Image 1: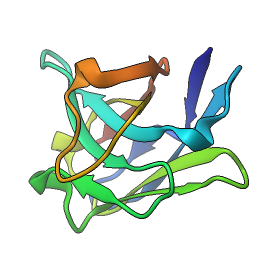
Image 2 (image 1 turned 135 degrees about the vertical axis):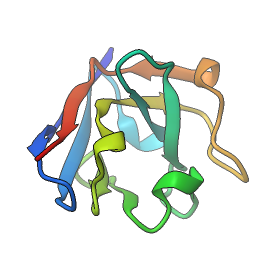
Image 3 (image 1 turned 180 degrees about the horizontal axis):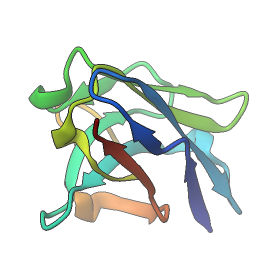
Length: 124
């Protein structure tokens, strides 16, 4: 049971990427999804979450207005659209499956399944 991320890469400041997350071995649709990132030398940071139906989303302040989380349950896929990228967004981005996304982003310990991560590098 695992998640697989894709879509990372090298992009210039101000650029965009779309990350995707698909499940292997289980159905993603019943889980809330979180996107978590880890920058070099820093702890993992939950960036955004979306509930199972897609009706509820949350973001940390530093990405509000730039990142958009979404999901297409007909394709069993979750996404994180990254716009207006800045060098400080450079990190490995992980998707994780959990059980809720409500008024706040769940702590990392509340996620059940994790992907291996995809590298996002923002540099000129």
